[in-house]
Length: 172
Ligand SMILES: Cc1cc2nc3c(=O)[nH]c(=O)nc-3n(C[C@H](O)[C@H](O)[C@H](O)COP(=O)(O)O)c2cc1C
Image 1 (tube, protein in one colour):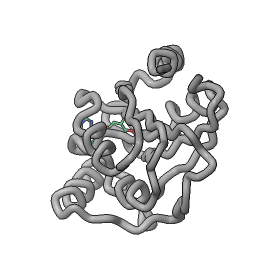
Image 2: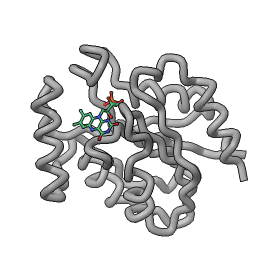
Image 3: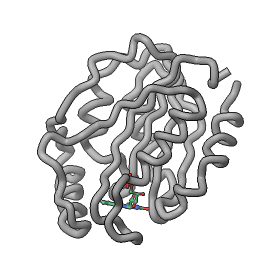
């Protein structure tokens, strides 16, 4: 049972100016990460870029595009050294230009994924999962990557039951 396994959520989420809903106190992906924390009693690890992205949306999209196009690995504020204590890792991010934000690559590439169960999820404004699941499959060598969940950013407040259903449906 996924619910009974030692679980961790590794996520990136950006508050401040957002696509449709103005300034957010809490990022959309973080809202979903906290639902998972409540539902399966998971620990949380937030990936944060050492030098924060611009607060305003437009500038941030340009910064993100440049990082993606140059395949950069930005430095992080803090790093997770290992995931030895966990069996199930939920990996969550906003879709940025169809891919995970590059700080996720910086963090995920440092970890040993052998034998782990990975549950990928995104929040987005139209792209769904984008290329996030295939990106995660490439990075998390040796992990069993299960079906992804995509939640539209403006819908996160009412999405807890959808998250619960996704976890339930991924029992194997
Ligand atoms: C830099 C940037 C790029 C984005 N690119 C996409 C995209 O390609 N497709 C999409 O559906 N939404 C895109 N969005 C919208 C976010 O994925 C969406 O608002 C998400 O819920 C934000 O999550 P967060 O609040 O956890 O950061 C982008 C947002 C930003 C800031």
